[in-house]
Length: 203
Length: 203
Image (tube, rainbow over all chains, first blue to last red; front, side):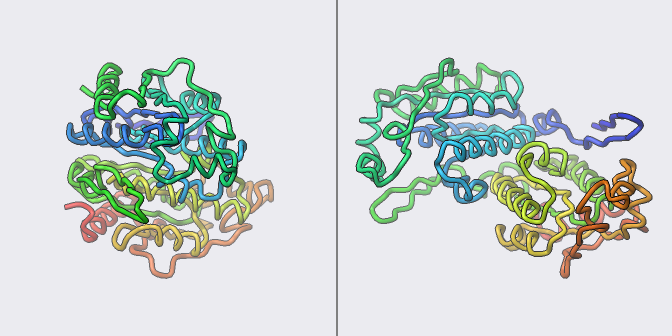
């Protein structure tokens, strides 16, 4: 699809292949499924189960979490408030391009601030952003935590730890709430898939 | 594909869907075609022509250039040396994830420093990174420049402009050289496609 736009007598070239072209090729729309919740609440586990099912259905997918972002794109950032803002900002700008590439992106970041998540939503079109709130009390998260980071946070060894020594602002209007302290991860993943169908990202 | 690795008695989860799974789904390998050259040398034009042909062949593709990166992910950066380093670093880390997502990524950035381009190459596996040097004398680029930025750079209105008031380090061992001052863009695109075939990113 050729798209040439003229502005002040300057010919600007937008490329031949659009998001819609890529979506047609992939057989589904591009979209962002944003998981938010405390550390060890189950965000990553559920996101990967959702990806597994989407891939089985032939969708182009990618999961972002601390592992592939904090060591790369955001390796220069700390967990201070201002760096957390920049962390989520960069992730938002990056995943926007993945969505433009026609992929279904799943992100599993604590992303504790409402305003930061709202900014990511504002980068995308209506229906491209689904917020999944994985709700779990910090006491339950602490019992699951295999890395012992909750114990370290309580002992003050890890500073500014969300839910212990840094705030978590729960979503006010999430697209779906997962109660991961009483809901099985597979069941939660099925509910998220259903939501993705309702939003017509997939058929 | 399940991948559970154990490290110090901590079970670490790498996800169910791997790059190879995504490549199988897309029908081609993930890879990065990195165009480098002066402003108005033709990088973006050729990259978009290559994308058009790859898309026609059913490949999952994406083109990155100043338009979709400088206003988003790198909107906080200037054109000073240290910011140019950070600009290319972020782009490198981001496109690494696109390649891991099984896409063929084409980038059209001046990327004037050899060391910065080398760093991006080092993020990827052998055969995943192809460097395309779009060679064109700055005098020729200036005659093509519809935005008048060369004139502004020569007048000193735009500072630190590559090829005029900032250095450009040509690649020493690019995978292909395009002589865009004497070679037609369509012909150049066909040569790049041939290279991508030789590297077995596509069939």
